[in-house]
Length: 240
Image (tube, rainbow, N blue to C red; front, side):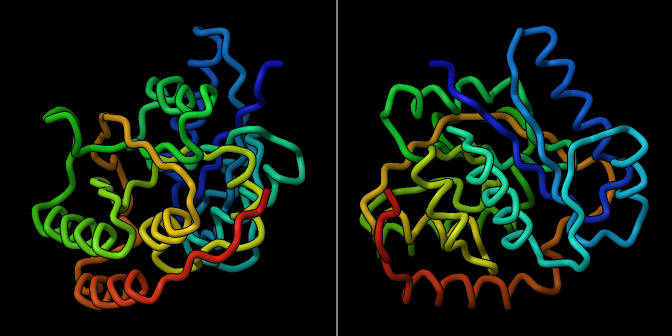
């Protein structure tokens, strides 16, 4: 049976990016005879993101207030669980992620080799694509060190927003998903719970317009809190 795949796209003030991101996926589907569905989560945007979504008939859910990346992505997972999707892929609305890597990301899940697949900028000596700023790369390495310390598993791209999960994790995340620092914390928790994670090399692009949700003045606060959350993370239970 063919697996149902959906791309969950959180969007906050992405009026300049979201249409081209969606069109890229539509064009990819037509060219490659794939059927990746899309749900955009408009996370309380204050710009014209909602207008762009409505005018272009882009499937989306409008949140009445800004929940942040964790709440927005969990909304997408709730939608995926309710509609019985087999694989859900977190995919940024800012144009940084490349849909051409999706088939490689879902392959380990289809082969039942992994419960989550992370699109990584930092494995296999991958020198292509956008790598983020030097300060953030240092931060990512620190987070990687603490995750390994906590779980004994090495994760290289700890803050990657390009992640595919199977049906078991869709169910789990629809019920319990970190609202703050969702990528590194959820990664830590599911590793502690015995789920399998695989990283595959991907190339990412630099953001075309708009700003990242993590601004420079927040970096120290972000790092201290994410590391503390990793240290005190608990495994919880598996949702089969």
